[in-house]
Image (tube, rainbow, N blue to C red):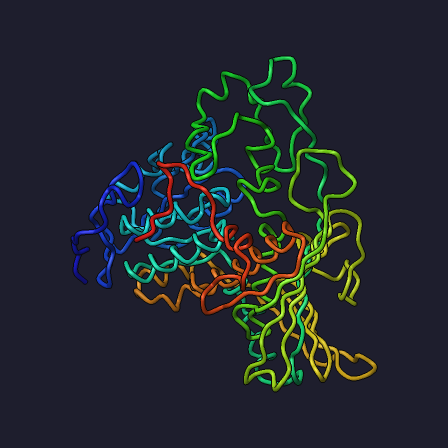
Length: 475
């Protein structure tokens, strides 16, 4: 195998403050002794899942960590490197500096949603292979540009739809597409997940007295957010493409999910996995009609995304559906709920994160012969008027291993969750959120990727960007 080729890429003006590095990964990838050097961008929460997963793979080194919050580094380095006898990683606060590092072959983007597309596009332009967490884009314009960049620069780009790597999901799709359940006319995605109130907090850092009033979050780590702590946080860089606002706890670690500037609500958090599965099982791409109703109930807090949301997507008739259209439903429930669609007791489920006493996350498929119930690691089919159990499937895969295998083989198909498929599923979450925010049913043209005679809705296909963090029109 040859070494990387050096070619001319885009100019500095196309990506903001930093010029695109001129190294471009190509079909002749080679690392030292075939080792793949990976960098993790975003090392709080899910970023640690990525770090540990890549560290477990043979011939892979997590060579660098990058985060705007450098307070995180000492604990991460000790726990995941020095305590294990591993070489310490390179540390970066600014991802643009990371992209200049020629030792890095691939990056795993685990930032907040509003950074996913831009961080990925810049990495692609720098010749890095990219695995980007879901949703791969914060709006539809970003997703289109991300797919365009992936195709132009021919690096491996994997979407975070990790169920695409699971034998369970693969056999689910094969079963449904084979016709064994008859005509599949409707799918439902469910995200019933217990979420507590995020409260309300004033802008700015907390006083030493105030910090003691804060409780430890579910991940066991809640920073004090004092002035001393924030000295090591590049909050301007954290905001990135979003509009500039004062620091607030509810605009920062994790709670950004419930703010439109940075997140996409639970439909764009956990729910995008179930939407992807529903769309895959139905065998559809983009809808022509979208309806959504919901609201923010029970809590008087800073959340501005809905905690109860019901969306319906209508897809046109095609050769797989006879002369009938297909329907995809998706629902978020934020508090108490029933185990809808799952007939086996909770105790029999072996994935307690997805299905437990407080969480009910999965999919239902309805066909002319019966219905299928699916969670992350198994599915069951019930047929006939008596809904008798007939067929089952299960199995978990390794999304991270598929990404590395694809890099070594220079084969995008081995990455399983191709970025274009990820974009189509993300498009649904954005369409659903737009319909909810505008409060009306929308008609969408999949060919033009615009709404029909609705300039107000069209404006929500993108956003206003800060000058240094614009998504490039020409990637």
